[in-house]
Length: 181
Image 1 (cartoon, one colour):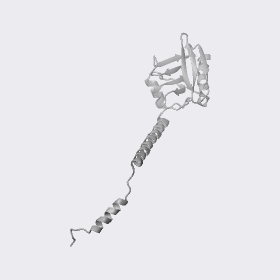
Image 2: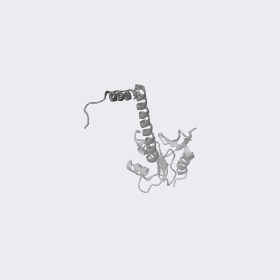
Image 3: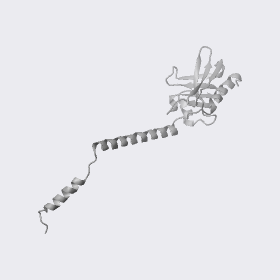
Image 4: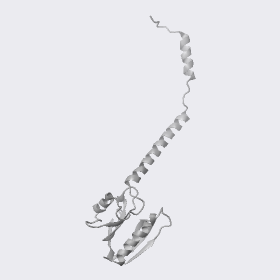
């Protein structure tokens, strides 16, 4: 049978073992919390960049036949793309979503969509264009600007200079203005 009394030497040994355990200092706890938060923020940032890379529009002008169907669907939804119209070049100024703004050149017209513009959708028939000018960006990080001169106004169209497709975009418009079909 076991005794209900304890040996005092056991208590002293246990107490000595507890005194030997080191506690984590307050600064170390703060440091570990900060490192954990930094890991969460960095992980979230990496996930966001992956989302943008997969779902968001490219930073360059899409050449003929390479515009994703979901972008063309958005162009139809906002009233720009009509049945039977073929998009030749497409560029989205949006970072995460094509609905943030886009421009395209088709076989029928030039369309500029800016949800913050007034009006948000501008459709320009080639016959209405009286002049064109391309101002190329010095860096691929900046957009080139195509100025489309109309009878009573002008429209500035941002186009990425990446892969020199701003020149292709400009020449597609220029070719249609010079030689309308």
